[in-house]
Length: 287
Image (tube, rainbow, N blue to C red):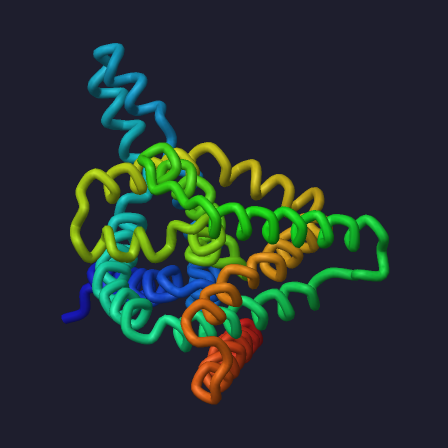
């Protein structure tokens, strides 16, 4: 006897596992995985169902109304998805932490290839023959390049910085084409957070979680608006942001031995992986 509801929960959980792995790697987007697996629209709809109305009613003693409002949140989708993401982030972060400590040059070369290919694919979605798009791309590049330089010089891992980083990164995590881990790498928080996750640093993890929740509830609608009303400018800016951020892995490669055959090969591997994922996406979207 089949249980379609339970089967659906398992499938959502598996998709969450895949999204978590993607979100742990700079240059690969969890939002892209959501697209590939056919749950992106459902994801956005579920996120938009999360509102604070139930909490407000609870504070005013309207328990029945609060419970009714709470039932409007798509828990049957969000809980297994988030469980899958959290589990794979925890398990895969161990692999990433080990690689960053033992093979930093080739790991950052892999990141370099991932980000470069992602920027290349994103640039194909915009028309760079239009001046305002070029200006937006240059602004994104300049901002990322300057931020990368600043974070390389003085990286703070204070709780307010972690909170802000989470709020920004979570928005990127649900956007196809740009990686939340890439944002954390740009802000100089990636390796620190990977280590904190492995160490089960409760203060850091809870602060990051709180920032992620605030980011989701505060910025997602704004991001959705600019993508719908200023799509070309937004994608141009994101492309520039990704190109400028290549300063981070480049500096790390140079600081850990520089160019070698293995560094080159891992960079190519990262570059090709993004194109493989793009081909899978194209195939899925044509079905």
